[in-house]
Length: 535
Picture 1 (spheres, rainbow, N blue to C red):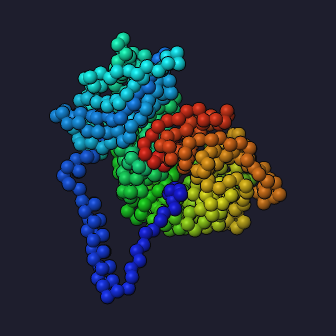
Picture 2: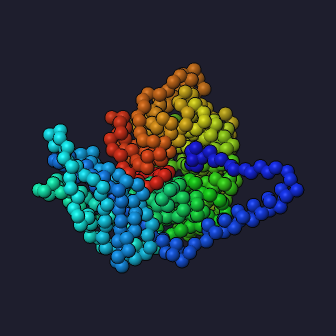
Picture 3: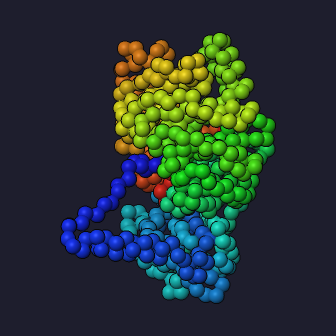
């Protein structure tokens, strides 16, 4: 996916004709080239700013006191006494409103080295009791918390402050906040969710049980697409870095980057999908937006093995899931299942949504000789930017950002004759759709709409899509979420949806049965995509 998610403006300059216009144009080009060179060149001091720090505040669980304090700045002090300001904007924190929640206080790059304390600059605080407000004094010595951390190059360090609000007011009505400070603790990989933060150059790691950020992993520049590996003995997370033209490989056991795979044959990778093609072997399929291509990467050899042309502006990619997902669903006939099983003994389909050419490229990957070719190019709606495979039904759903419709591809039809008449449409689903999830267990399809910021629930039609009932309004429910949502994922237990809200820098946790947002989790700047290990 690319912003518009992705509509980008191009700047142009108009020159009046004059005897000096050509000379001025040359000077302008020279000036711009010089500026570009200057921007890309870093001083020795700037080169040292390679580590990151995130600071989270955890609100009290069940506070008895209603306290509010205005935090205007947070400084972290190095071992040599140098303070560094790490908070971007002031925030007002209330003990009742923050109860049981995380708040991202600070996110900043810092020089490598050791750090010994945090200084919180509080501009005011007050207590509300029995409907009356009492202003609190601030300690003359300031507010400081001891820490002992080390910032390392190309690594992220996370600090977690737990606020004891009820112990934060002294008898003389002085606000003396009590914090306990802890660093990262080991987490069970199967409980984790990973979110790319394009504006922060990192990945937030969230524990699904506690609904809290437990770690942050520094990756390449402008990370966008993300995918979880399928080999349980080697749990890995793969991140497409659109700004550094690479794939970061995160070890889920340590939440550290273990490899950086360069994308040499494509340009600006934006989405990524994973397929297990043999025991212990995974292939990565990466869409390259600027070069209109799909890269194939062998994660075992950490090598880009192939690159094929797509349509214009490839923004999303999906692959056929394991063939075992066909059994027990009851949506396909025995003959259809046999056809898919036979096909999958040798081939794997890869589906790419091309935003600019309004079509989907269907590639056939021969897993026996590791070759890939385009099987079909299928016309869909305007601005396709999300894609999901509903294998139990033999369908692929394509969300069209600029069309009031959902395109449906018949996988069996594509296999039989290359896609003739394979595309049908569900109309009246709404525009600005940025995500689609099939939920066969509940006979639902979830659509994520960037505007007005909601999940739309629709029903899949049991009969043919090009029939009168396919033109009726299929919407059965709506769930509001955060600002400008761009992607989402269904949890492994199929009970909750996790929504990436790019405009509000957080994740909505949605109970799909109750049809409501139940929690909000803060992440980094401009979050983009999300991945979770499936069972």
